[in-house]
Image (cartoon, rainbow, N blue to C red):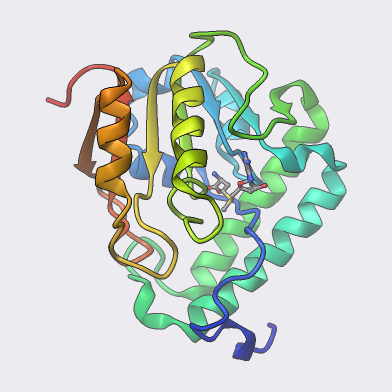
Length: 236
Ligand SMILES: C[S@@+](CC[C@H](N)C(=O)[O-])C[C@H]1O[C@@H](n2cnc3c(N)ncnc32)[C@H](O)[C@@H]1O
C-alpha cells in the first residue's frame, strides 16, 4: 500500500478516481428495484464499475459512458487498480470520513472493488459496444434514449473542481437522455455538507426539472446517504 502522508486532509484525493462499485452497491445507493433494473439503463460515469457487466449478464440492458473509455481496457484496468490503492490510502489517512457498515473493513473493500474492476475489464473486452467514450456535459445519446440514468461519485463529489455551471449543464444533459435521473452521493468528498445543493435544485426547478432528495440504505462516505432524483414517479 502507498504511504498515507500525501492523503492528509490538506492534500485531498488528487486526480479523479476511476472507481469500481458493484451492482450491489448501485442497488443500495440508488434504491434500485427489480423493475428499475428491467429498463434501458445508462451508467454515467461508468468508470470501472461492475454495474453494466452484471446487469447485462443477468439479462438487462445497460450502457456505461465515461471519458476514460478513450483508453484501451488494460490501461483503464491499471488506472482503476491504482485508484483503488489511492482510495484505500485515503481511507487509512482519513478514517473519520467513512462508515464501515457496508464494508466490514478495508480488506473487504479492496476485495469487493477489485472483483468489480476484473468484471468490468472482462466485459468491456467482450462487449466494447456497451462502453461509450463520452464526457459530461455533452453526451452522444438521443433524447429519452434511456429509462433510467444513474450518476455516481462525479457530480457533487468533485465540487472542488467542477463549478455550478458544469453541474447544471450536466444534470440537464442527463435529464435529456433519460426519463429519470438518479444522482448519488450529494456531498463532496471529505464533507458531510453540500452548500451548493439547494441552489442547484432551485435552478433545476426553475428550468422545469424539479428534483426530490431521499435517504437510501447505503452510507460509506460519512454523510453520503441521500440520492437526488429528476423525473420518474414521485417516491412512495
Ligand atoms: C469516482 S469514478 C465513479 C465511477 C462509477 N460511477 C462508480 O461509482 O464506481 C468517477 C468517474 O468520472 C469520470 N469522469 C471524469 N470527468 C467526467 C466527465 N466530464 N463526464 C463523465 N465522466 C467523467 C472519471 O473518468 C471516473 O471514471
